[in-house]
Image 1 (tube, rainbow, N blue to C red):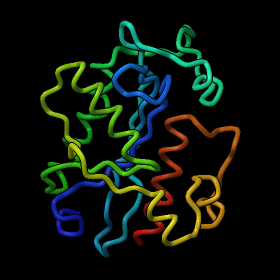
Image 2 (image 1 turned 45 degrees about the vertical axis):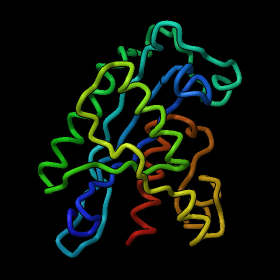
Image 3 (image 1 turned 30 degrees about the vertical axis):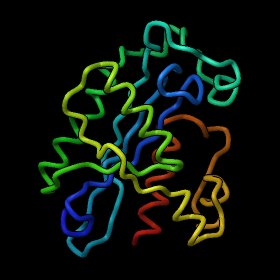
Length: 190
């Protein structure tokens, strides 16, 4: 893995949020799929890690965002945890995988990856996390890859074009979108 991606470990991430501004809007869900490589160099999906996140104090939450992601931030069965704990649930296995695979840094893979990275970086800064495993600005963006290789930029249409499954009823869940994006990224890279 380290040789294939110049020392980077690709980790597919999706976040669900309370809006578009990472400085002011709540991070509500985060999920990550750590990618692995077979001995023959085939990229495949590894373990999935996720957390429901409690909005930080003073966080903005737009009604329009909740209508899309269908999250009820105050629902008692959500089992949301504070941002520092949510980040730890993602960062700890990512750092372990980096060590296991001989990588010096993780690179975020996502569909509109800069959006996800901005929310992770903002949360890490709010929480004074000193060991954010993700490169601060480099990403692998599946929107770009899909646009160039499949002629599509929307995740659902890209998955359809690639003959991969997509369930609109499950969409906009961090885990579901992350796992579908990971499957798509592996297909495109392989």
